[in-house]
Image 1 (cartoon, one colour):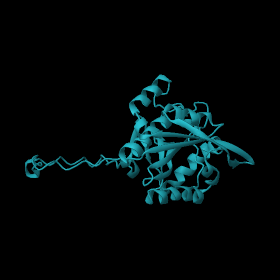
Image 2 (cartoon, one colour):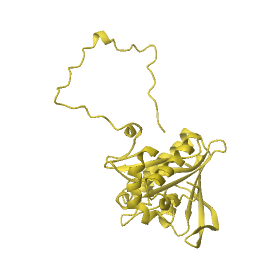
Image 3 (cartoon, helix red, strand yellow):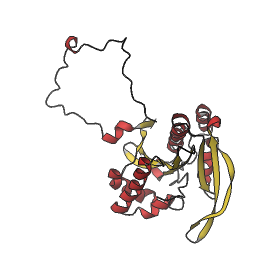
Length: 253
């Protein structure tokens, strides 16, 4: 997902430091603005939004975001209920940091104008088997802007193109229409329904399993489809009227 600029080939001469005049020192009254560490790894989604790794040291920011998003995503994202204080929020992010270290999952945040408003994650990532599962969520302020769809496309590209996986999965409750819409916009196919798969507040929920194979992924087509449908970012899960939980995280975490 990230690229590293290569050194120029030997045939291209490197600049001669002695021949390059030193830049004039900045005035003492002009402070140097330091780019936030996390922003070094940012992926632009729109002019005012970006996708970045979400890490344990950001637990306080994550907790504030959860307090705004919890009511809308609680039915679909188990750790939304558990992340209620700084320790539990940090534990949630640490669980994904551990998965990232094992190359078995990872989590990203969506920042809009510098505020965390949602995110996307690899709930499961199995490079050996060539499969993964993607999930997303959003608070009300992140809805209706195409941010979720844009984030999903980046994760799909990373999995199928950069890492060479064969299959991306998307799981959602049958009553989560916004989540289903994201899968459809990405060109996924419905594999089947897991009847009474999980228990939430005493109620058994059916889950749909959607999938996308590497040979079926045409990101340019998916972007165009999102635009035609009225979502500039390609994300149909965004809800302009309230909080959104798109791809359900039914796994541990």
